[in-house]
Length: 333
Ligand SMILES: Nc1ncnc2c1ncn2[C@@H]1O[C@H](COP(=O)(O)OP(=O)(O)OP(=O)(O)O)[C@@H](O)[C@H]1O
Ligand SMILES: [Mg+2]
Image (tube, rainbow, N blue to C red):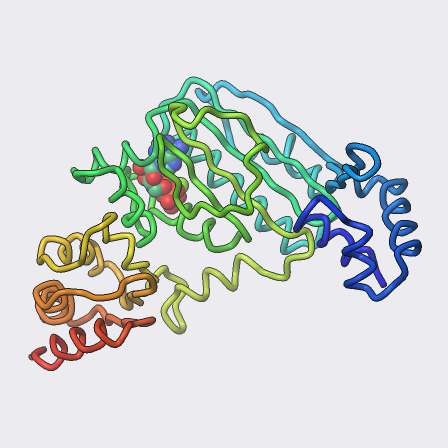
């Protein structure tokens, strides 16, 4: 039995570790305790508390954190000096993902936040590495809402999820967040009271930050043994035989504000905004129970007729959604 079983068990919960190990590995309680002690001695786990209250956590094997003045900061230098050494012995695909994600997010803070200071941190344990980039600037959701004249900063999340969103088209293309959010195991942006792709798995104590802090915080996590590659993620969203960003997947539920139904043409127009920049848009209806006739008509007939070169592909439809979509599609010219 290798140590991964034990380490994963600790990542899932900090208490009753020896008991849980003995059950899941089919070994005696004594043998399980011995393994736990060996992992502590090896510096992979830390023990907290005593007796029945004893708990274990994955030990941090590396931690770096630093503040930088934003003005004049170059992302590749931060990567090389602070972050690259932490992941230097990991597989090359994992190092490439960290280099991509960290340089993209640091570049975002430098180019878009207007903040005075940028903080970058990275921590590693035996299973995974986590990193964050935080600034005290304008705040990503507010910035996007202002630039796109959105009514509610929550609508910024829908726009970010679509991809190809940039508020500075002369210097940027809107790739960074879209691809970073897909290449990591966990990816979370916090700004104001909003979370983009929040995942409970991300460690809330990783960085202390009041809930209403100004600016933007991006958190990323990746398994140290991940087999994912940046290339496979780029290819997934490229047209066949092309290397350009041509396809996207849009979670339709992001167009639905709490307690609302998707019925209006104006909601549909917000959903389809910028779809014409893609050759193919997969509409993921997960979490959407039903849609109204005018909404469906606007997306699947009006938009489709106006932009026949963009293929719309609805997936995860409930029977009610499917009915509405079929009806609208049957009227397409
Ligand atoms: N730290 C930040 N503070 C404020 N706004 C941000 C921040 N990071 C990103 N943004 C906003 O989010 C948009 C999307 O970011 P993203 O990295 O996806 O694209 P981009 O930086 O514009 O283009 P690219 O990454 O391809 O160079 C940016 O154009 C900017 O408006
Ligand atoms: Mg960017």
